[in-house]
Image 1 (cartoon, rainbow, N blue to C red):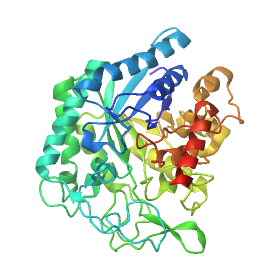
Image 2 (image 1 turned 135 degrees about the vertical axis):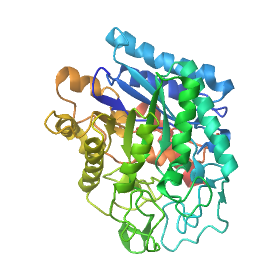
Image 3 (image 1 turned 45 degrees about the vertical axis):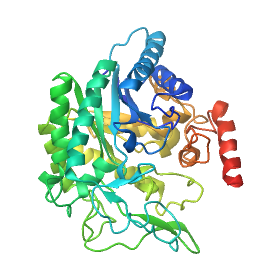
Length: 436
């Protein structure tokens, strides 16, 4: 790769109902192509219609392949026009099944004592969901392995350099990592819980070839679900059972603390199956958003952060460093930079330093929505504009959670720094919410 800067898989919720990219999707990836980053990680793309989290999420199937091919071509052409060639540019497509957060019918890996009743942040006094979601069977999971492999073959046909199995943020593949109580071949001990990922990577290798990059965005710490408490602005954990056996990377006796022993062993299974690129993430944005995305201002209806955001940044940095040290030959992409604003390039440089080698790549998520050319200016000027950096005010998250749209989902972007078109879009979303 030509440099150490990556664009994270940031969903725009702006596709068409048939799963193909929309006008705003093309606009976003054109800007990412011009960004200067050399690793562009294309957003979550469902491998089955049932696995979409909203009706505008990208969905890869035979009828959408040509449109996704145009999307990749637009991104690459923008890069070529700006930098003269495609040398050192790597593109990865993220593949997913939304599982518990699929719409309209959620599917889960196992019964969860808290998330089955309260899958999202809400008041502590909110009534629980009356009907638990359906637990998917082993036959369905085995068929899904083949769907991921088929999607990977299409991704190779389109021209992507590799694919990513999305195993984070509470979606189906990440839930399998904590399916300790699930019977059958996909649950139980760690080798059983790794079955889906290992077999799927092996099937992808068979379908897409040995020179196709295998990647994974992995949630290494799920934490526990949070809620808003009467009379308190800060979020508080919902009541949870002890020992807590229902999350990845948690200490059973105290799941408020991270324990990377199992995730490290799981990464070993992935490495044996051919994994070459790892993007480290954590948390469940629907249930404990401060873990995934340390923020200055919460999304409307969500709690104020219960910890200083810098502690959240440090947790991301620590997990990435531990993993990179354990697997020095693995290309690890770090996250958690956006809250640092214009200081993020200094933290990134420190983590990349030859002396420290905490990571190999720096990933930009919300920061890239607010400031798509951040990488270019950091590399060409040696500095970035403090007035342009993401302020973690959660406007993008607000739009991601706004459903009162004729297509069932508002597009997500950065209204403060990308006013045309998102300034008008957020006004429409707020008007629709008031009307509703």
